[in-house]
Image 1: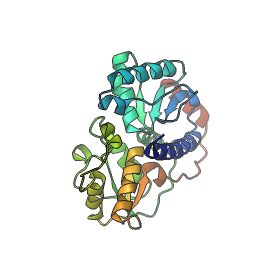
Image 2 (image 1 turned 45 degrees about the vertical axis):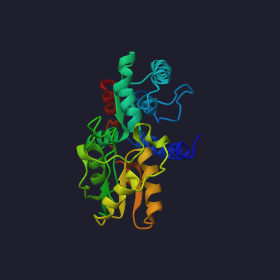
Image 3 (image 1 turned 135 degrees about the vertical axis):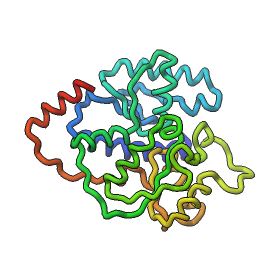
Image 4 (image 1 turned 60 degrees about the vertical axis):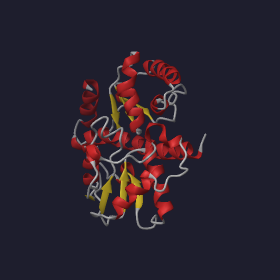
Length: 262
């Protein structure tokens, strides 16, 4: 496994454990969803989603991965799939349907925002630090996931200052579509470094991401530019601190009813 994939795996594992803690607080039944963390197999059968493989033209390999994953997913009992990776979201939601895989797929920020709105997840707000947020290509432009990450950032008590290039006009980190496997020979400024310079102009101290590739690329960019001490790269998940949920009469019955209807 390459170093970038190893870093992806560490980031995904951390977020996955956080999601597990939030699921327990929200009393979300296991049957409500299946967790897909892109590189981490559940039940020992799931493989890489193949999104980037397809984008670099390996259609045959993608079809093999897709069919293998569809078979593994169908063998599980669940209502929805939640993924920490926008690239997996795109493959599972948009590409797999052409191979008979019709699933309801959510990015984890959409699920958490849903739980917060429903009063099933209780966040302890922070002290109002100023942050900016980077829209991942495959969460934002490709799948319209603009609002949930921002709602969570605000719910966590942070003040959001969007960059000039945001939402539909966001700027690629330089890793998507298979670009992460390409070299940088002859490149004067990496896309990730260009993006970090844009964020530095806002006077923020925290650069929030919602994609494991973004975490890797922008952490490397701050190191390369020598600004890691002044601009911290943080996943949305890492902003969220939970507070103890208040006791609610018949809470378990309410949650089970919601899950049955999901």
